[in-house]
Length: 399
Ligand SMILES: [Zn+2]
Image 1: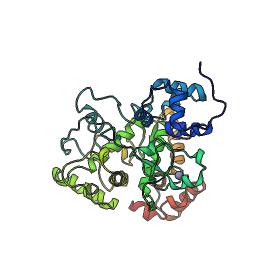
Image 2: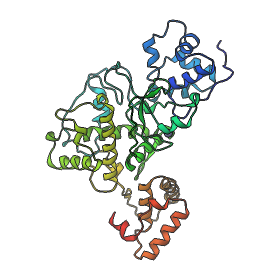
Image 3: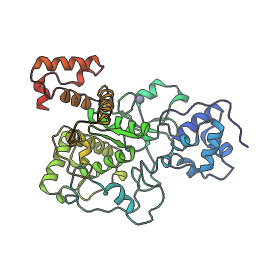
């Protein structure tokens, strides 16, 4: 029978398993390897290479033991590993049963910007979403400089998501994450100079949506709420589409992709020349550019500046669903409308795009500037930041 540890730091929000085990080990005067190989698993069971990949997948016995020792539910401990996010973040960690099926199912089952016809055929073998193609590749830890400065050694939390090329910013401070030496704790910065360039507004929105996906299991898009699994597939599909070789595209999609990269302020396809490359195998600076361009693409769709013709494209458009009714609205419809209005208000307090949309909707029948300003003041009184709201009726009409 295993005993409960008397004292332990609780896992942080989104913390990776190795980060938490390292902090636990420190409390008991051990290092990470000693805690795992002496106290959590029978001696010799876990090879050193396996210790390094516990954030990817941890043996179920180890998860059970950690849960028993700490009182943290097994499910939560499992969620501190990538395997705990199957099938939402990726379909499986196992080798492909049918060659090329992982990539086909995750990236090519749907489309966002392109129609199926517009998308050039491509296949990838032994692929896993968001993870390097070759398991020997070192996964980079990315860390928020403000979090490092504002925490003491043993309270610093290394998150699981920041080890994957999915987000660029800290959900608490909004600043860019920087590559750091780890793997379980912050040891030092990988580059002498930290990139302090402020994150683009659209990247902060994209990362906030990913954070919402991870904490609530859903993402609120302008038109509807989608499941966490759909969000990660949508994001990865946009990344794939904007990295398509231009010579393989017809005129319309090619112009759209060029516009997206121009607006993102990066060279087309993050500077990649020639044949398509797999996102997961790119360098972090290239992945950074692709994430920024993906966020820009979504922003352009939401603003109506480009049209998303793919099967998931409608999720990003800002027009509400048009449902035809042949009689008076039912009570259920009004209940739904109230719930939707409440949800919109909460989102508008945090998301400029939603705030803009709420103001545009409430003033859609307004003709005078005076009425517009009154509605705008009401929204500000409801804690929607003033800077999120277009200043005049003419501005909101022009959007
Ligand atoms: Zn931070």
